[in-house]
Every structure is written in C-alpha cells, then in structure tokens.
Image (tube, rainbow, N blue to C red; front, side, top):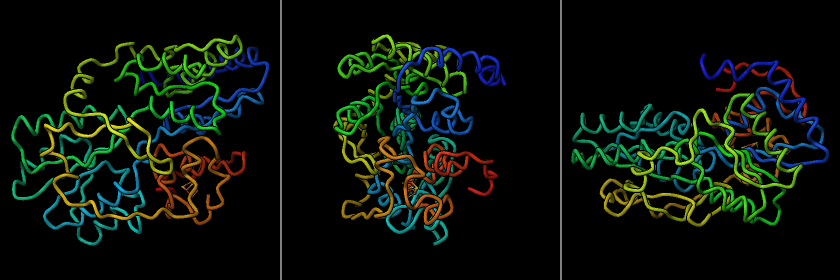
Length: 375
Ligand code: SF4
C-alpha cells in the first residue's frame, strides 16, 4: 500500500538503526506523544532494537484514554434516556465509566449507535426529527475538525435535535504539563504527526526553547519512528533543541488552514480534565457560546454526576510516562481487554492494550495474542 509499505522496508530500518547506534553515547529518554506511535513501537519491537539506555516513554496521546471519567458518566446518563439516539465511534463503547459502559446501556435498551463520522450522526438527526441525536465528540486536534464541521452544518441547516457531547484536548498544553511536573524524565519528544498535519508546527518552538527539549514531528510507520528517534538523539548528542519535521509527506508548517479556521470558528479554548491526570489549564476546546444550542452538556442536565475511579487503576501514571503498563499490579490479572479497569486497556491506542496485545510481560515479548482474543 502506497505510503505504508515503503515505510516498513527492513533494509532501510537497519540503516536507520545503525545510525542511531553510532550516534548514541549515553542514556536518553524520549517520549512518543501519540498512542498510535506507541502501538507501532510495541508491535514492531522498535524499543527493543534501540541502544541500551535509550528509552521510549509512552505519552498521553490516546484520546479515548484521557477522556475524563465525568464525561463518560455524562455520556452514559444521556445515552440511557428513551428520547435519545446516542452516536459514537466504536472505541468509546467499552470505556468503563463509574460502574458500567455504553455497551451495557445498549443492552439495557438504550439506543447507542456506532458511526464512522459525526456527519453520519447529523444525518440520523435529520432522519429522526422527533428524537434527540447526540454525538460523542472526543479526541485531539485530529478529530476536532470534523466535529466542528458537523456543528457548523447543524447550525447552517437549523437541525435543532443534534448536539455534541464534547471533550477535545490539545497536545501542546499536555507537553507543557508533562515538562512542568517535578517527576518528568523526558528529554525529547516525538510529536504526533497527524495532529501537526492539522495544526502545523508553530506552537512547538516556544516549548522546545522553554524546556530545552528537541521536538521532532514524527509519523507512525516503523521508518517514521526510527527517523524521529534518529533526529531526536542527534539533537540531544549535539546539545541542540529545535523543532524538526520528520513527517513532511503529511505535515506543513502552517497545517491545514481550512481546518484551523473551522476550529477557530466553532470552538473556544477551555481548561480540561484529563482522565488519570487532572485538569490542565487551557488544554481543551468547548463549543463557542454562539453554538451553545448544539452543546449536549448544556441541553441535558447532567451536572450532578459523581464519579469514582477504580483504586487499582494506575493509568494516570501510565499516561504521564511514570509507569510502564506491566508494572501495574492489575495488568493482565484483574485488568484485561475483556475486563478493563481503565481506558488505557480498552482503546486501540492505549498503552496497556498494546502491552497486552503484544505480550509485553515484564519487558519480554512473546507471540502476539490473536486479535480476536482481545476484542
Ligand atoms: S493495566 Fe489496567 S488497571 Fe493497570 S493502569 Fe492499565 S488500565 Fe489501569
């Protein structure tokens, strides 16, 4: 497949690895921001091919994982209402709230539907004018533009029975929070290429300067990851800390200007809670006041919810790179993809799910489980 197969070439991978081994002279800790990158690293065993002491720390860039428990519980309550058709991407259906998930709501009679686009949910709203149709709009800068477009179209077409339950988060404030934490060991970042394809790279030079960290915009295939690592360690070894774009086939400095304009129009910045981490100032988007009529939190009274995280789940530490998934006592015992305690064990981008799927049990790798056994 074009743009995929050629970025999995074993000979080129060997050359990049040789270069990395020749460059590295001391231990370094890099954080890959995105859960998609984490899965690629664990799936291909990239971390095990790197020089000893060069550590890849898994970052918080899994949208399903960081969606706050409070919002999951609000989704469960709204989805339980008989007048509501609740639409979501499939990942969110198994994310545990306080005591249940959306699958359970569906089994109890709730009208919960998996859709592939927020525009599908908007179509369902037009087809069912007597019902309230809610789309669960979560994620990073990557999923925000289509959600913004759905609300924009709902307003343009005056579709009043459509609303968005929104919890969007942004990467740069998360990098700032991670670097400001006293426990942070991260010395360089592999930034998420798809986020930068939307937002561009202008938010990153100030962060690289302020914290003295190289930031390399990196893709998702094995050669992308290795090239990101190679550029990051070259900077570290030479004492530099700049922003580099190692994913030019998808990212330009200004990003997608049409998508950014739509985001600016429909959303407004806000403080946002990250599941397992807490509130990060100015780290999210909510609907701008002019679109309040399409805001599900405003339309439905769901402000009295109290939440309870399972005490055993340490996903907050996993998401901040302070703990590897297999170091959690519940990993693979009381917490599995079939019986998840935290969202990081559910999501296709979750670090705990990656370690379980590819059998990372205490740093060793055995044959991957069959995909069907973790669904
Ligand atoms: S293994 Fe399960 S309980 Fe442990 S941090 Fe991951 S999701 Fe939470």
